[in-house]
Length: 235
Ligand code: DER
Image: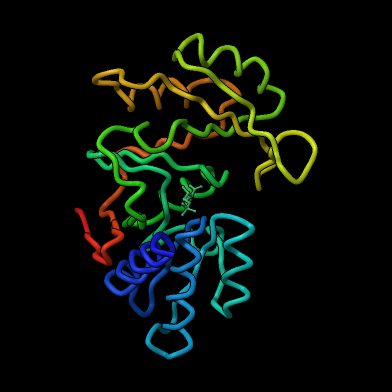
């Protein structure tokens, strides 16, 4: 499928350019990162990538790394990383990202923060001018006892509407790897000149909110892969 090929091309292009032997690597979560793990596995098995360590951002990524025979570690052992590579649900013209479609945003953000450089790998469906063109909501990780008040207070202060993310293969809400809930905040579209940083700061300062899926001012480069087979690194 073109989209899967695009994800793979973006992941391999980024790995080839920014992962070297000796690298302490943060590994994101989601279907695009699955191809990055494939790249790392090939490089590690061929001897091209030596002495790397991989810090996962979810149970799923951790299992992919283990199954690939890659050296897995954590931020306790490696609190400072060289590179973090992750996917995104949407990237706008200023490299502001919406992440958290897969519900892993909290560990993704702490691992990204621990890395010197952060690269996003994405297929062309994530490339947008304004947030909301592609992905209609900002995932927000919340402490369960705060979820019902926040479902009401977030739209009151920020507009839009909120839904508690329900699981599909379990009764009740999605529970994250950290034991929390996810509120998807559907923000109003076509609000011109929205100040995402101010929104992020207000949300981060709200009791009960653990983390938001807004990644602002932290992306060093984005690898977009397109359906025609091309990959563009945008810095
Ligand atoms: O949940 C996340 O933040 C993931 O990185 C997501 O944003 C990208 O997932 P995908 O590669 O499966 O589209």
